[in-house]
Amino acid sequence: MIESVVLEALKAIIPEDKILLQEPMAGHTSFRIGGPADCLIEIETVEQLGKILAYLNSPEIGNLREEGFFPKEEVLPKKGWRRVPCFVLGNGSNLLVSDAGYRGVVLHIGSRMSQVTVSGDTVTAAAGALLSQTARAALEHGLTGFEFAAGIPGSIGGAAVMNAGAYGGEMKQVVQEVTVLTRDGKELVLDNAEMDFGYRTSLLKKFPYIVTKVVLQLHPGDPVQIRAKMDDLAARRREKQPLEFPSAGSTFKRPEGCFAGQLIEQAGLRGFQIGGARVSEKHCGFVINAGGATASDVFALMKEIQSRVKEMSGVELEPEVVLLGEF
Ligand SMILES: Cc1cc2nc3c(=O)[nH]c(=O)nc-3n(C[C@H](O)[C@H](O)[C@H](O)COP(=O)(O)OP(=O)(O)OC[C@H]3O[C@@H](n4cnc5c(N)ncnc54)[C@H](O)[C@@H]3O)c2cc1C
Image (cartoon, rainbow, N blue to C red; front, side, top):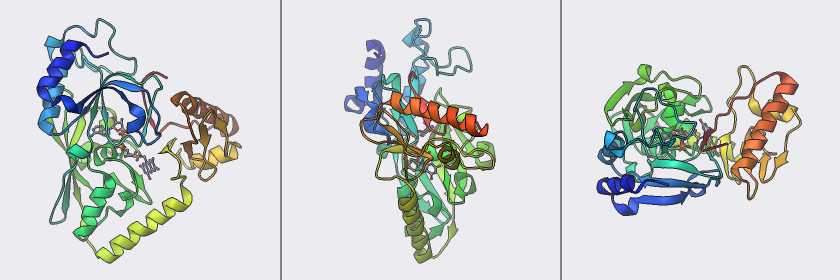
């Protein structure tokens, strides 16, 4: 439950109809799983976001920390840093939310903050812009280099955080700079080197800044070829991935020197199911919601996969999917 004093203050910053209470997270994740968030706010502008962050960090909302208000997954790098737990949601395509939901405020950076503009060879996208939308803008302006991202179902903010990639491309190759707000509402602009991109990681995995804008540096290209490449990659996805079922994409990161899906298959887990959660028969690297899966089903299946793969190969699979709430 959100304290009424907190709620009243949020209403002074953001229109009431953009503040959703007890909002089922299943409607905001590609897994179609997740209990209610105490509060979900549809962010419309960077200014609103800055004010909310400043408020959530202000002394006036009292000693919620002492009341045990923080769930255990919260990281508190310095004293007094965050007094109301908050989580930033993009397009929810890399996320497993617990069945009990989330005790805190979810800041949703989605379609209301999704403007994309193109100038010369650079594309500037607000954090909530979908990768598909951004790739379409690049295509329309005859810019190449972003085709790899067209079929990844995330927001550009979420993609910057985890250095999303596919078919030999990754965000690291195209990001010129990323604008973020720190958790106390200050704006920073990070260049490509400062983002410290690595395989499915970046600086923002260590520092919980909030992405508000991403600038991409692309190159002039032939629109016919750009479209052909996008179509080819989309066809490869449809052929190899279980897009007909809800999922969060690859459940585990690719271990050094092998593929998670291969290890899972070799462990005899193709089609293995716990409750409604199943290892996809089409692509063993995907855990899918085969119908009515709970977060507990998915989590139990992930644990079972990790344990059987470890037993068989000695490899410890690391989740790529972000977990939110109590597991
Ligand atoms: C069918 C399918 C296929 C997929 N294929 C690929 C693929 O080929 N390659 C790949 O890399 N991924 C893939 N994914 C996973 C996913 O789409 C990407 O990881 C994507 O980048 C996640 O973005 P999102 O906006 O959905 O993030 P969310 O799921 O909303 O959030 C993921 C994490 O990013 C953080 N975050 C989101 N937005 C922001 C922001 N503005 N500021 C700060 N933090 C933020 C969240 O707090 C959370 O920690 C796939 C997923 C599905 C369902």
